Length: 466
Image 1 (cartoon, rainbow, N blue to C red):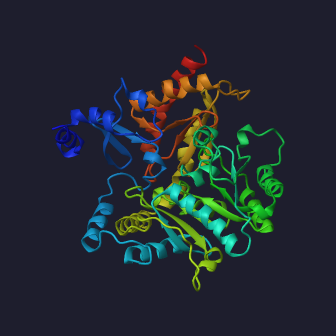
Image 2 (cartoon, one colour; image 1 turned 135 degrees about the vertical axis):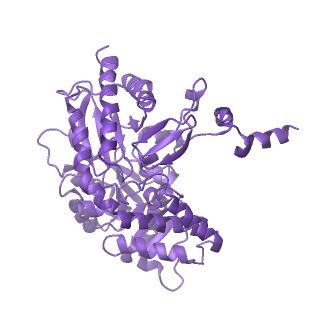
Image 3 (cartoon, rainbow, N blue to C red; image 1 turned 45 degrees about the horizontal axis):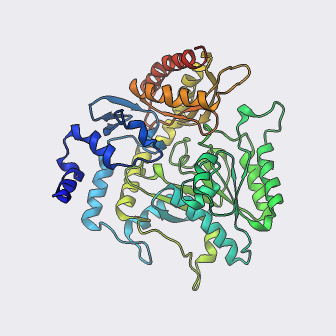
């Protein structure tokens, strides 16, 4: 009897909408979520999406200012992506890429390679971003080992940077709060300064952060370093952009010391910065690109490592093999959906739209600088952030208690209540991040401003002037 009851309530088809809250609180373990926050409160349940908007179980509409999680790049409700999936299921629902190939994975690999910069011609598919980073870090180690440099196991990353949650990727992640509870991590993660120019001392060389990478390589010993992994625009901390010449200097440093350069573009690829890849936006050539999210506009779980011919070459002959893989890497249905997604990008020139509209989007955010709580506005393309401060002149930030009260105690809930989904984040100094679907336009920018301005005004009164 108990088993039957459990099966009945675990089946979504039999759950009335009024039951969703109870079922979710009893059975669903949400990611990066303080589950206790919803013991006495309703949790947000999103039931459908259309364009730049999503709707909750009560039918209330929200502007998705975060593309769900930096990933629904083509917007919600693209039925042609689902139709591509249905058509693929009729032919082949699944077959593995372990020693076999199928048409959609082949076609997608060729298409991705044609869009990637330089000689990044080999595509290794994964199920998502952390898997892509994990794969790239393993490949970097393996590449050096097969060339007789097996001591190269360390990876250089940046402070506050997020590169994923698997143990290898977490070793590259520079956020202490999500590292310490899982230690010991995979050994080899080393961290250097990021490109937070807002907090940099006056007069500091803009390329100081790039030179810090070389100093760390030399400190560790170049013979022990396999790769440097960097995002084109660093997500955690609030959309840190590189100073002019930064990536060119890093490329020179990596070449000088025989270290591979991994461009982590799980967020920054597929139009987010106005180009298919962030490396193209900033004019540098990595040895590998990690990608996910926007590859399918998140309509299916898929990621990839895009690898240069030089890095792939040792594994392409005789009995050599990169002994690594995932069951669902290159899934035929996900690959078909990715191809349909890229058709939309090409047909509607979504990259061109971002480049045409990013100035207007940024100008709207910059207009909020008259609010005393707005310290900095930064980012690129449709990937922007506002850093919040107690005092604009001194750049004084909030302490941990104040940040908790500001972000979780007020801003997150109030913005959502007023119909705007964005990210209030404290991995570093407190910021609000915006990453709308690439189809967003003037109407959505004005709506963001109309909600954001009064909420930030009230936040300052509540937290600073109380």
